[in-house]
Image (cartoon, rainbow, N blue to C red; front, top):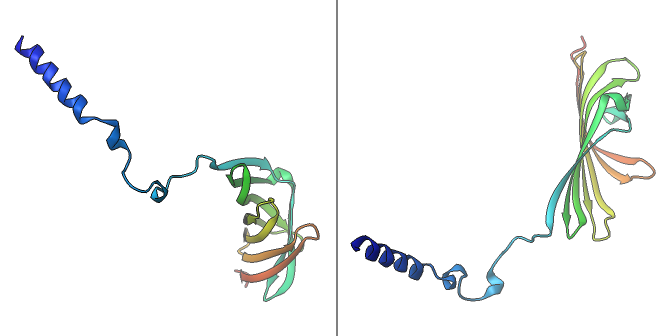
Length: 164
């Protein structure tokens, strides 16, 4: 009998201590910062359609790199708010080849896009890192001015070669 009375007393104290009024803070509800449930990040993977880019050193085009869909793949990360794209990172990885020397490069390209409320691109930057099997190493930074016309502005290029 003592055990039953003690158990009922303990359960009563537990129920009295757990009230719903303490679950929410008192005060101005507008001060609460809750994450929107309509915000999400989505990943997409797809085979690349191909690759072709100029190689710059000292502000001058010295070569072109090209690759086909069999040697490349793409990965896109898109951030959506209320099902509207706000930004995206598109990563292209694989192997490409030098048009002039035949050197094979491992490529890692990161494209960063920012969208407006109509999902039009308002900022598009690109970083390409190509490391060749003959020692050539190139990192290039571009800003895309006109996507349809393939117009890009070279911001910076870092070139290194082990050729002697």
